[in-house]
Image (cartoon, rainbow, N blue to C red):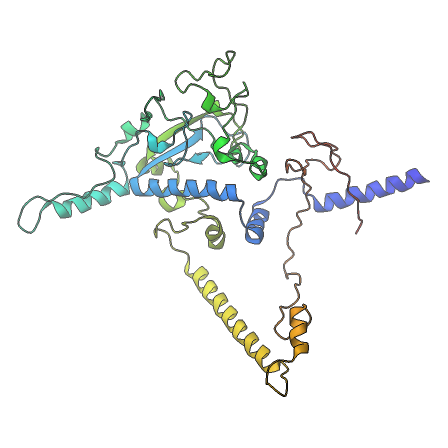
Length: 389
């Protein structure tokens, strides 16, 4: 009799789990809903803003630096163009940012170079016939050709560094599927580095020989991680430079389309990116601006109406004309009042159900409902009561 009740209870629990826990990965709609409800995480915001700065730099100079995989991605639907946009803040294998390496100032095969040339033509001849001087383009060297960009290495200019070529390596656990590390209380981004199979980070390896300086058994850096975009190891990737014209010829996005969250609603872009307009180069759609203006006007009208209603309906004492002490007591104690906020009700559109359970030690999501231990840290999973509904 008891066993039959247990079987029936387990059947009901499995049915409830099947209804509320999807077998597939998190959908784009669920991610957008989560960003709108709770905002992005601190680390994901930092990562996307670094890539946004890289996209803006590429738009200004016409030089596109990306970290991409040389093989076909293992993940279906993965971005085959690149795994990361590279900017001045992105750190190389040697531990120094791209800003410390030699970089091409501007690409010759780009719209940015064409604009500079047009400005130069306008300034070469002055009013008195003398030759003028073109403004600085951010680099003293001539614009790089497509052939030069294809062979660009970008050696490090830091004193004492033997790095002869810029090699990007993941700068944050989010890029290798270990984002839970950033949610730890003692997490420090400056102390993290991508690990080799010898258990030491890339900063402990020589950038020239790729051998570990902390142990003698490591013959070269072999990644102990996979890229979260393509599911391939670090060795299957490369850092490449290309001009705007080269990317257009290959059918890859440039300028505005190259920016992070380019195809996402503007309200989400504003919530994630510090410079959503990329220095005024991108403007929100007229529809979004009209809806935002209408919403702000409705909020202002609602605030005015609420204030007027509160002032007219508040009970006043006979002697001083001030609100009665009873009304003030109710307002201070959380009781009913004319200016109180309305009760929170469910929205007309049902929100997606995200019923997941995290490990209380390392914040890793339990992959299966029957898991008794955390797959990451090995701590036992606390038992929770099952409430049927």
